[in-house]
Structure formats: structure tokens, C-alpha cells
Length: 480
Image 1 (cartoon, rainbow, N blue to C red):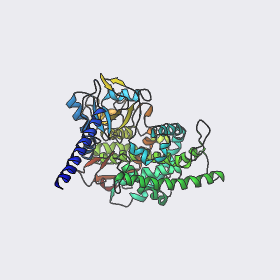
Image 2: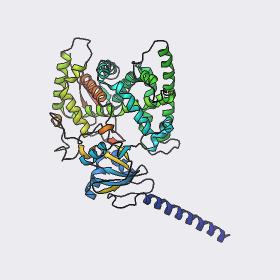
Image 3: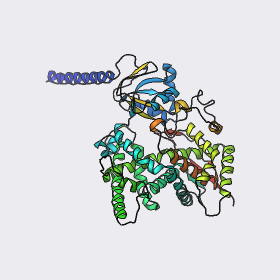
Image 4: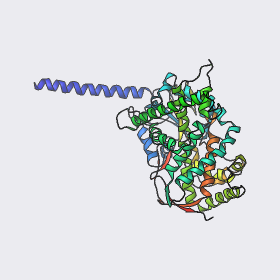
């Protein structure tokens, strides 16, 4: 009997040993080839993902990048992220190479979790769906449409401040910033403005956004499973909205140019086919994420820096009050008003330099190529980092200093300031984001000054920067 159990134990140990050996062999096989960039590949499946993510959780995502640039004396290094063999491209040359070779040597790539959370995209791929979306957006984001949105943004901002800020001594900025940008997105994308209707989406939407870029472990209680559940709920709700909009369009109660939802219902592909309801729901959901998370992070850090830098606040206040005093009572902001907010936008840009809402993004090598003398194999994932230039003294002298004058005149050199990406895949909503940030700035500074209640509040990045406690502030309303 003892011999039998010893045999079973031996078989088990051998099986585990062989399995681990094969796992390590398979992992290392992705990193074989001549003249690959320097770097470490970490453990099978995990790679260096935990260290990559943990530097963000500790509030210093740039540490992962700069430590390796220094260690390997190279602005391109190999690693393994999210279970994929990867090369990190850091610095101006890396940004220029990736942004200039879009759809030639590199293409967009998203982690597997994205396709699982947006299942209808599996009919093609997340890359193909993104291409379709970019063809739809120009109509919605063309200049005459953006001009029209400013008064709507100001109207929503006034309602937002009346609902969440006025007559309060203290507020949590980050949740309010998310509420504002989400409310705006619902109004402009789907003509949903009623607060109760917006609130129905808000909580599951935040659950979805927080689990989108995460380890795709589909088990009860994991962020990934919660994101899938939230996605299913939101898509069903969007399906009901789409069905009702179809009826309203048929009855003349809605118009084709009313918002992007109506535009999508009329849009056709190359073969003249309309999108189905779930595809439209997925695209609206993607727009809500893209038009919400990054802007809410930028707005939150804008409030943070203006609290810390009273001399900067004063200049923003003077610029915004000059605009406010030039308008008749009840008049909403317009395009000409926003164009006068030059200093305010320089301040917002400096905020996004120091705390970029988009930390970076992935690409995929479409073919073997050489960069900086190193071979990059086809299929490798490529990551560019905003912090690799934003916090680089060669690109921005005294990089930790807050200095809006960096953006005067011609501004930063090309490929150094990249909060919206660059090249053909530069964020198509860049101008939309500029407008919502400036409209928020106008409304907040003309109402209040404020102090941080937690002067040393920790900042975490997961995957966007956010204050660990939501940035509580004490409000000081301006006297009439």
C-alpha cells in the first residue's frame, strides 16, 4: 500500500514538474530571437504585470518606465504585460515611431478583457469595431456641432453645480467630476438629461469602467466578472432606449441630427446595411467610457492643483470672471467665450502633463521590424507611456514644477505632450474634452475658492489617476 501511495506521489510530482517546465518553456519561447531589446520577462502568464500595475497603485506609474530606462540604458525594453510579450517604447523617438507607423507597422490592440466585456465586438474584433467608430465620429465632432454643444454643456454644468455643489460646505470632487462628465455624455450622445435616468446608468457604468482593463479572471467577486455583469445590464438598458428612439424617429418625435444615437441608427456600412441594436449599444457604451473617464480625471486634478496653487487660481479666476461679466444675465457660454480661455487651457494642459488621464496605450506589431537597432517580432504588444516624456527633463525642464507658460506660443515640441495620444489614432474627442474641461473650469471658479481637506492625500493610478479618498475639499463661495 505504501508503495502504491509513493508511486502516486511520484507521478504527481513529476506531472507538476513537467507542467511547470512546459509552462516556462512556452513563456520563454515568445522571447527568443536575435537582437531583441534588453529587459526581463518575469513569470509565466504574469510577466511583470504586477510590478507594472503596483507602481500605479502606489501613485508613481512612471517608476516602472524610468527604472528600466536607467537599468538598460535604452528607451525601448522588453517585458511581459497582461500575459503578452511586449516592448515598451519610451521617449520622443518611440512616440514618433509608433504614431507615424499606425496601420503600416503597428495597429491598435486591446487586452482580451475588452472583447469579453463587449461580446458583440467578437463578430469582428475590437480593432475593426474601433475603425468603424472612427468613421462615425467626424459627423458628431465636426466644428459646427462642437459650437452647438457649448451652450448645452454650460446648461448641464449649471444644473450640476446647483444639484451637487451649491449650499454645501464640503464636497468629494472625484465622484462629482464623474457625475458631471457622465451626465454630459448621456445628454449629448443620447439626449438623456433627467437626473434619475442618468443615475440609473451611473453606478453600473463605474463598475464596468473599473474592471475594463484588468486581469480577465471570470470568477464570482472579481472586478472582471462584475464588469461583465454591469456591461450586460447597461447594454440591455441601452437596447430599450434604442428601440424607443426608433419609434420616436418613425413618428417624427426625434430627428436624424439630434445626437449620435440617431446618427448611428441611420448610418450604413459599405454594403448599405444598418447596424443592429447590440452593435449600436456597444458603440454608445464605448463612447460613454471614452467621453467620461479621462475628462473626469483631468477635472479632478485641475481642482487639486488650483487648491494647491493660489496664484494660478487667481489668474484663472480673473480670466473667467472677465468672460462672466461680459455676458447678460442668463446667457450661456458660446464658442467665442471659450476661445478667450487661453490661460485656463494652458493650466489644464499643465495639469494633464503632470497627471495624464491616459497613462499610455498598447499597439501590436503587424510585421517584424527594427527600432533603435533592436528587432521587434510580429505579434508583440507595444506600449507607449505619456509619462516617459511628460516627466522627462529633456522634454520639460524642471518637470515636477507646475508651469502653464510651457504651453504659450508654439508650445511643447512634437511628440512630447501626448495626453490624447498622437498620429491617426489621436483621441477623436480631444476638442470635445477641451470644451467640457473649460466649461467646468468656468463654472467652478466663478462660484468658489476651495481648500483640500486632506493635504497629503495619496494618488493612485488604476488605470487612470485618482485621489485615494476622492479629493474632499472645503468650499468658500464668492460673495455676490
